[in-house]
Picture 1: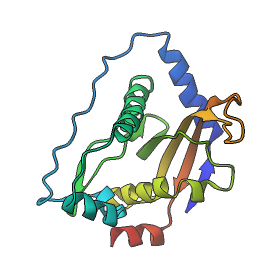
Picture 2: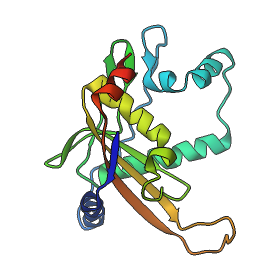
Picture 3: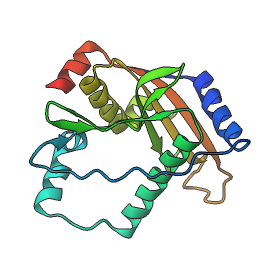
Length: 194
C-alpha cells in the first residue's frame, strides 16, 4: 500500500467549501439509514471487525449518549461536505453477499473510485505515521477497493482540534484537513477479496 498526502487536493476541497458560502446550497437531505436484513447479506464492517459484530448480534445493547453524539458529528459533517463540495455520494452496493458503501464515489474531473471521509477528535497523523494512525480507515478503504475493483482511493481526514496536547488543555487548536491518495497492491486486494 502506498499513502501519499495530496496538498493540491486539500486546497481544491477547501476552496470548494469556502466558495459554497457565496452561493445557494442544495437542501440538506440526510441519507436514510439502511435496513439490514442480516439473513440476506453481511456488511463489510462486520467482516472487518468480526468480534465486535458477533457480540452485537448475540448481546445487542443500545448505543450510549456518547456514541450517538459522536455518530451525529461524523454523519453531520459528511452531509455538510456533500452539500458544500462537488463530491458525489457513494451508493450502497451488494457484492458477493457483502453490502458496502463508501462515503463518496466520485469527485468530477478529479477522481472516480472510493472516497472515505473521516472526522477525528484527535490530531491528524504525522507524516510517515499515516498507515499506523489510520489503520482501520485504510482497512475499510481496502475493502471498498477490493469489492469495487479499484486499486486507488482517496482518504479525507479532518479534525477541528489540530495541535491539541494533554499537557496543556488551553493550548490553541485549529481545524485541519488532509487528503491522501491511497494505492493498494494487487496482492493486498486479493487478500481482501478472500
